[in-house]
Amino acid sequence: MTTLLIVEDDLTFATMLKTWLGKKGFRADTAGDLPQARKLLDSKSFDLILSDLRLPAGDGLSLLSYIQKQGITTPFIVMTNYADVQNAVNAMKQGACDYIAKPIQPDMLLEKITDALQASASQPETSGETPHAETAQAANTDNRFLEGKSQAARQLYNYVDLVAPTPMSVLINGASGTGKEYVAHRIHQLSKRAGKPFVAIDCGAMLKELAASEFFGHVKGSFTGAVSDKTGAFVEANGGTLFLDEVGNLSYDVQVQLLRAIQERKIRPVGSNQEIEVDVRLICATNENLQEAIARGDFREDLYHRLNEFTLYMPPLKDRGEDILLFANFFLEQANEELDRRLVGFDAAASEALLDYAWPGNLRELKNVVKRATLLSRDDLIHKSDLGEDFNTALQHQQQGTALSLSLHDKNSEKERIMQALQAADNNKARAARLLGIDRKTLYNKLKLYNIPQ
Image (cartoon, rainbow, N blue to C red; front, side, top):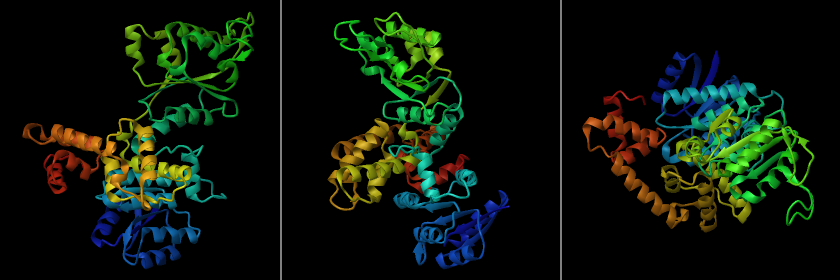
């Protein structure tokens, strides 16, 4: 039986949690403070530790530091109140595998426990790195991106893991700034072509007249300005992966040439009579609906089906509530390095603002906001005012509009509006209550009244 250690000073809550976990097939011990937790850890081993951040005579971070010094590699999940999410993020930076906000949603807790246990079981028993380093390496293969831990992110990267080893062409569909190129890189890294080239082409910036040269290359003198031979992207990527970003921007004529190259697996450089055999895997990305483009006659349906053997949909940042502060701290670390600053995080008001904002520009917008705030901050924390006037004004307008659209002015549609608010808030009850213009206690009463799962 899987054994858990619950470290929680609220004995009633700890007992309820222990009982509920027991019904789910876990055996749990409880500790009400750090000395008790250390005593239990010294006397027996556990498969997972579930610890509150705020504890008598210390905190969850102190316990995390203790187990690391003892060489204990047990997965560590932090429980925290909404206002302390920033501290939970800090705990993950120090080695915790995940966090969950109070009030605890049982199904979400069970999912996180299962994920943590599976991740722990899949790690090698002997490694020169700490579990945190291994997790960071797996989630951030090039130190420039973070995959996240939200349900939307886990589903996306499960699909990435599934399709990467296959030879299938992949179409990545998502709004600008959602990280489509990183996903393309990740598919390549996990594929059988990982040791071969990865070549990226921005179709949105490609001139129609030079598209054939970019794709297939040209020979010297084949057209005005061709002062030397040029190797095209298909030959550069031969044996590897060719990534076509914003593929929907290709002109119709270029689509015909691209389709022929894919079908025949041969290309002919501009001005040459010699055909070259090529073997590339295509990964394409777009932020538009290609099926609508087909209906308009702007995109070839036969090319669409060649490119779309498997589709990945990039979730917008607003649908990845659990990931927002993870990315914010990740971008803060990058900004600290670039700007030679030493900021440690975000205060409660700034964290709440980041979580409430809809992020129409997705990760790219978040990165820019954090970088600017890092420059403006006058102490070691980013405050809400540091996020900038443009951000705060947009947030205010968004909250006013959302509150108006979701306010409970019609009792006949009350349940539906509550469900909409929960979805918009990524199931965060405090945010949903603010969207609805009610307090959190009233929201919980409504959830009970309408039998809405908590």
